[in-house]
Length: 533
Ligand code: KIV
Ligand code: ZN
Image 1 (cartoon, rainbow, N blue to C red):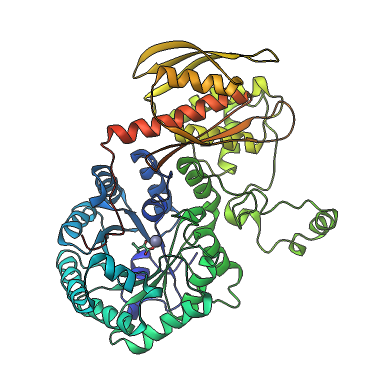
Image 2 (tube, protein in one colour):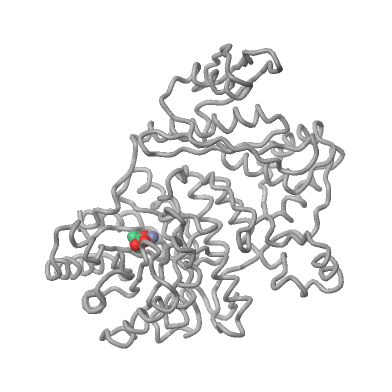
């Protein structure tokens, strides 16, 4: 973290900036949330934005205000609450979109409008604009945005598949119309590191006024090169990286914040750039985003995966004991990972629980601690030893369950065994009213899901049902993930319990609550491909 540069200086015009300072633009709440099934609630978005702001993200893309009432409300509230970060709202190349984005971000101490249009031949076809018409549209919309806000970012969507001469032409138009950040999206994850660098070099060399703006790199990970492409762009002169926590995002995702930030930190010797990120908050951010998005982090994910710092083989363990640097290029503490795995149990008190949670990266308010402590005790009663992973599962569940309570599981009794059919007796609280049923099924989980469907009839299709043991042993908690689908829209739920069937029921209910919340909000959504609507 660079102590001598304030965030305001970092985002300032190039002449006033440290030339090696790279801005981190986080789009977890916009591009990340666009990932099918990653829909977040209002409160969850506020919680993520607050953490991003605290950890030193320079620009938070808080959402796409025209997309829905919910998006607008979230961006406005994030703007109002923001402290240091610039708050950015996305808008297509239309006055209506831009006005709506401005309405949402204008209450931020430091607002930004981000407007974009697809410039590649494929996108020009979709929008039915020829090169000249599109150029005119860019001039008009960036000018309009600039008349509202003095911080405007412009993106030629699918830039890496846009003819180079045309790319130079439209970037020049956007700069002349007043954009101070030019973002170069690799929308479909098509580019490779050398090409990513060449595009930035070309723009800096050929476009008049290029030295007066900040170039950003926005990469998708379809070929697994998003991190490499972003770093190559920085080496070529880009000074803003657009990324998401855990690499969340459509298809294979976006550049992962934790990867680019840690790469710049660990390999400062060959990439002498700095960011303003407090890297010790990375694990906390990763866990929060995994919990609210319902997208678990793969075990071998760089930086934040469960195995990223695990050393199983004898040779590695021996080396680690003698000198950690033999097999570790960064310390777990650098990303906020507690280096101990002290076991908690039923005799552990509130103070110990709070300290342990702090070690794990969770700051718990007094009013939350009571509820978490009760659940911790219930878990410790069933399980002799409570490990870090058990507490993380418990915290992830309280993060996702707290805001979605249209339906709540009150009780469940399942009969299973060699004699079919298996049965489930269930009581749910639905909108404050208690309802109960008896259902049968092909196995205890099937009977449980049938009971939920009988009590809350719906047409969602179960697309994924996955069970993971959180720790080892027969008393281990199981984390269950459920993915439900309707009309191509996905709703996910996750839950942990020492009883796998109870965890399954709770995960299903969480996904169902997300669907019900979406229905009640009037099915928000907008098609981002029609970028010039
Ligand atoms: O990937 C992309 O092109 C985008 C734009 C809207 C910037 O996300
Ligand atoms: Zn994108």
